[in-house]
Length: 450
Image 1: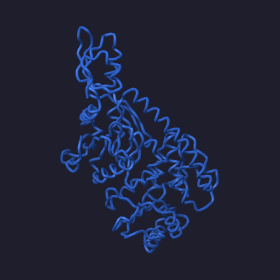
Image 2: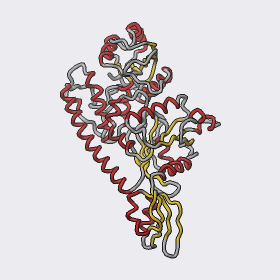
Image 3: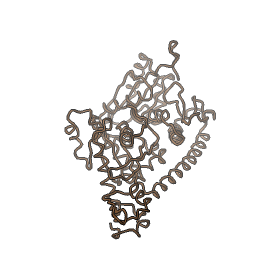
């Protein structure tokens, strides 16, 4: 459903949203709150998500419950109370902070009225992803997640017209209403058989993407360039940090999920070695398993990294809750055993950064920085260099002046510790990947050692 366009601006005003949250007396079976977030903070984040999706929040409410109501999730009386509030405020969409079962959505929509859409946090995140996916891979991943989400929620037969892919590589376009973006411009339908067939097709296309990514990673491995994956809670400043370290201009915005598609840039360490930084999609609390599975091809960039750099917004009032959420997600995707450096970002927001970081002092291998001002960036690179050194072999070589190619190779793929020019050639002491040892063996002045 879309609102009428303004006669003056000829554009549709934002939809009016009402937010609903539940504070559980005990976490119900099957629901997860990795950081056990306070209800008010979770609702505040939901409001930020709604704003990112283009909604205007006009009201909110929470209810304390022991367990979900089988028919309406919240209490039936509370649902009627909200329905009266919606009518007085002319609300277009109600957004729940928890994931709703299909029966809950149907029950709530029957109480709220046919003109009011009911979506949950998952549906809202998917809508944001649909807006921000700018590559074919991102569009496919979003489309797959949307279909898997919508399949059990079908209430009528749809037409194949909704399968039409949008121009420009996006998973969907605006229909003037949140929850309707994605596969197809409108709410034209398709039956379950057609949806399942499309899901199968998308999975095949994503396997091709996955295979292409695998070839790219294998090529990087052959080149010997270490890979560092940036991970962190959404809006922690990963893209800003990558821009600061690499001198690039990746899109940055002060909103949740500003960037969705992974980006890789080359960065030179203080010792001269070149490494690859990969920015990945941000994590968020209550991120559904199906959504994580849909982004498998992207998240494999995390799994294949030599090192993780965990970017933390130290200025956030619940920074530690965000940290726990990120670590829980890393464990879920099988990346919790990788070496990790914690970067405490946004210290420029405090007069006393040391005090601000004290609450996170229990995190190992922590470096305080401001990606915005550049403060502490050299410490980040130095810490990365130290960690990567543990995965290299020490070599001492005397290279003839005619072998400038090997000198360049060591500079690009190794970590230089000493370099001098002698009468016979260039003496280099460095840490290099194992696969370079065979090319350098004949020039070694001392056998390679661990």
